[in-house]
Length: 101
Image (tube, rainbow, N blue to C red; front, side, top):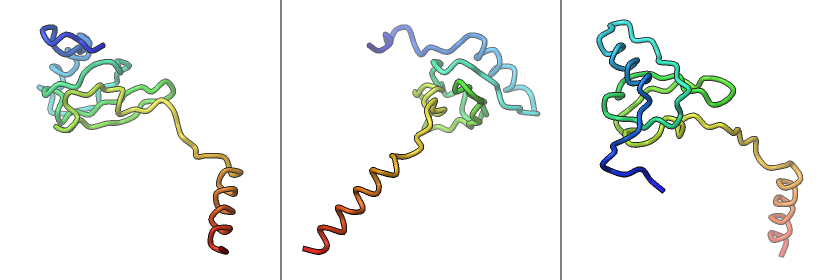
């Protein structure tokens, strides 16, 4: 179920304070955050974030295309290492068998 429109997008208060503080600062360091559930709003465009994925911080610079999404969408928590070698071998053999016919 999505959030009610009249409530507006959810953004962690501490994150908003950090964004307001860094807007006036000429030396723009990335903002380190654990708030993956915060929605990206237009005020965030051009700001760099370090988003925690449970193991390390992923560096991300916010663009206009990201507005409306959550911060956590851009820092995946799982790493796909591919399918097992046995699956690849079986698929390769199927391809060879169909070529012989």
